[in-house]
Image (cartoon, rainbow, N blue to C red; front, side, top):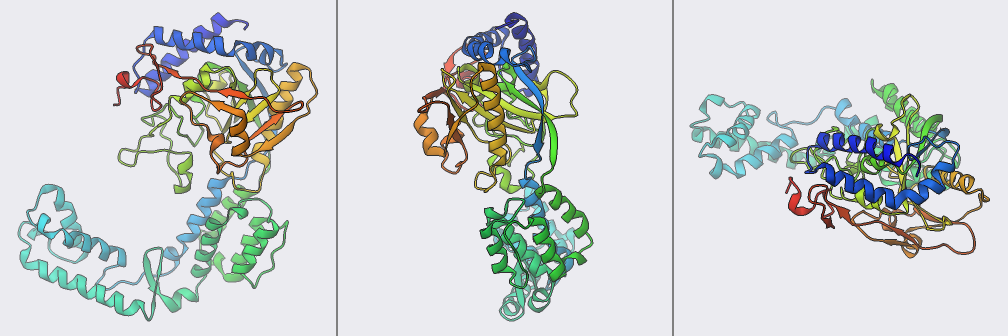
Length: 491
């Protein structure tokens, strides 16, 4: 490897700064030196024989070039729109209340009163709950230290409200997303259609594509029979037709929210910095997305303040609900990839970046690839953060795979001819995983992970390595930290 001493010295400073910023690891300089020695021994061959032979080699273990992409189908934008549709009813219909109580208010009141025996001791940590129920029931908060006399009045108000809901719901009320509305008003309003459309978008993965498939068109036809849908029709145009037919556009926010949805589901061509990297820092930051993270993140305190924007993104965001931090339950996986001799990181960076330290930039997307020793067989792991493994759209996998295949063959000066086999069973057959990473290609849900190969048959690829503690130097298999268990300051 050319300039190995310089690359390691610069990477050492970067890693020390990074671990200090994360503030959840014990380490010393000897530990970082040990990491970098392991990394050099493992990756020298691929860097020398592939990276350094590319005309786009940056001199620091990365191949970097601009590439045109169709903008990926934005699954988060898709789901954000369905969530907005689900809340359409709250914005456009008046929730039914009895004794000034909504159904959710009533549920909260019952929860408080069910704990009356415990609450009547008026412990400080319960005063807030007591005050909330008093405000809802128009009781005087000043009696919080002696509200036994008012307790029966509160119970009566609550029971009367509950009886009213019970009597009405059989005849005239409908429960929508946990709130009650008058059934006739709801059934004759665009809110009902909005709620149905939200449920359809959530329930059918075949709709998560720019153009309707035959099955996708059939699903929409089943739910909205008065409208014609066809294979090849844009999803956004189909949704717009539904909105026009059933009056969804009367919502004041429709134009803005639909524009965001159309932008999310109609990819355009964009230019991104495309990086194929063996750089040591990239193994540590390969989960540092521009708006996402995953289980391998080393940012266990969520210093980067990545937000869990949508419940469906739980597969790429692991956050402790009690304190808002990321679990990083597979953090040691970063070292597992860094120390093996097969893995490298593919990612994209915004074309607005004008510097040279791509390894320090937020990643818009990334994939772990791995090569067999003879470079004839290539493993493609999961595409993050798209999480659209069940979508019929192959583009998020196909384009990066073809880019990596092209780069490898150009560096080796061999024909760019590959055969592909897809699915977790195929990957399991040809990949031997050891160490502390999460082998996402073995997950049966990830049916687009794949093996591609040149020649007669795929070769076995060995992926992963045990971790090394940067504090004591011990080899370990404690998956949830870069440190071993004994040195982990978060235990």
